Structures are given as C-alpha cells and as structure tokens.
Amino acid sequence: MAKKRLVSGMRTTGSLHLGHLEGTLKNWVALQEKYECFFFAAVWHAFTDRLKIDNLPEVIDEMIVDWLSVGIDPEKSVIMRQSSMLEHAELAVILSNMTPLGWLERCPTFKDDVRDDEARSTVSLGKLMYPVLMTADIACYNAEVVPVGRDQLPHLELSREIIRRFNGNYGDILKEPEAILSSVPMLLGIDKRKMSKSYNNSIELRETPASLKDKIQQMITDPQRVRRNDPGDPEVCTVYAYHKIYTPDRLEELGAGCRSAAIGCRDCKNILFERINAMLEPIRQRREEIKARPGYIADVLAAGEKRAHEVAGETMHSVRKAMGFLY
Image (cartoon, rainbow, N blue to C red; front, side, top):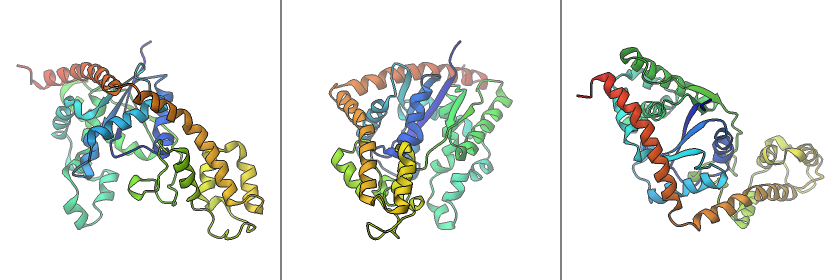
C-alpha cells in the first residue's frame, strides 16, 4: 500500500541547535520510515521578518548538512529548497485571492506581531501572507499529513479552510492535510530565555567538545544555591531541565543529589556534558563525512527538486486546468 505523503519545512535563519533537534529533526527521522516525506528549506518564509540573510547559499547548505547528519536520508525523503520551487509561489498567489483578510488577521502569530500601531506599521505583507504560503507549500504536493505541535494546530486549520474554499469553487483538486501531533520538549537557552541564535544562548549541533563544555558550564542553575553545600531546587535549574531529556536514567539520583547538596552544580553539569557530547559525536562524524564529498549537497538538492517539480507540476496542471488557465 502506498505511503501517505507528508510535507514539512524549516526556516533558513541560521545554524541549527538542540531545540531544532528535539523539536523537529528527531521526529522527521522517525517519520521518514512511515511516510513519503518532502522536507524543504523554507527560504521565503525566512524573509517575512528580515530584509536580508547574509551568505544565504551557505546557510542553506549548512542546514541541509545538519539534516543529513542527524539521519534525514535522501534515499527515503525528498529534500529541496522552497526558493527553487516556483510552483509554491504561483499557488500562493492563487490562494491569496481566495483568502479573506480577516482570516489572516486572526492568525495567532500575526496578532502577536501587531499588538500596537508601531508594530503594525513595520510588519510586512509577507508576515500577513505567511499562512497562505504555508498552505501552498503543503497543497503543492497534496500532502495528506503535516507534523505540528499542538500550538501550531490553528495554522494548519487555517490551511485546511483555504483549501476547502478553493475546492468549493473548483472541485476536489487539493487535499486537506491532517495533523500529526508531536510532543515537543521545551529546551530553554543556557540563560533560561528562549533558545535563539540572536540571544547567543543556544547549544548548536556543530559544537566541538570544548565549546559544548564551555556552554554547559555557563548554564544558569538554582540562584539560591550559592555554596557547594547549599541544598537546591532542581525544578528551577536549567541543567536539570536538560537532564530530563538527556539523562532520564539518572534523573531521580540527580534530583535527590541537588536537594541534599550531595551533588554540586559543576558535577551535575559535567554529567550533562558527557551525555550530550556522546549524543553529538556521531553527528559530528557524519558531518565530516558529508563535507568530505564535494558536490554531494548539490546532488541531493538536484535529485530532490527534480522529484518535487514532478509532483508539484502535476498539482499545478490540475489547478490551472480547473481555473481555466490552460488555453
């Protein structure tokens, strides 16, 4: 029986970190065994809140290297750049004419970005149109499933509404995608803020052992634990939050050791370093192997985009025919 088709993308906004790994990439690796997966570098989406991305080709290539390093397999999944797929742009223009402005203004992320008049005067049309382009990204491949976190469900439901409106006028051309709910572990940055490259608080997938150790040593622990023999509260400690993900087999021991001061913060950080470093080592090795193959990323993208054009081309032929664009 044919596998259901799945589409997902990631914005090209810089090097990837543990938040990307835990929130998206591990899920993608598992899903590619069950679904026909189309994974794309969401280049246009990255420009909705910035005017320029320096060294964009290199940023894209480095992201693809990270994908492959963690286990995305070009033999199992289609890997592509959104900016190379003009079918996405064409379908987004078509769907924009069928999407009421009110639908877009009620989108949760847009409302968050225009909380005052000053923000409204600077937010881009692309930001408002983000859900329409997202719908086109999905509908171009008639994806049947899309992996999302629970907080992203409103965005997918808006895509389904847009597709229903199109189909209501032109017939059942585009498929309504269903959500695959994923549990996304919450990883804060080393300073307890949201993990972000702009905050310089992220642990990146390409950390060396030395840089990884340095960042883990900078992690904020319980501020009440001033001296080594002060008991602490692990639930307010960033390090312990990471242990919940990377050291679940020692969680009870580490929690008890923190509360009784049997384990010092530096010891706790060293244990975390050993576990994350061991997890990142095979990723580092695969990255070096990939980078030792000149032209490999270009070949992966060429093959993926050839397949993507075939599928998206069929969809757009049906769309154009239904709308009377084929003369």
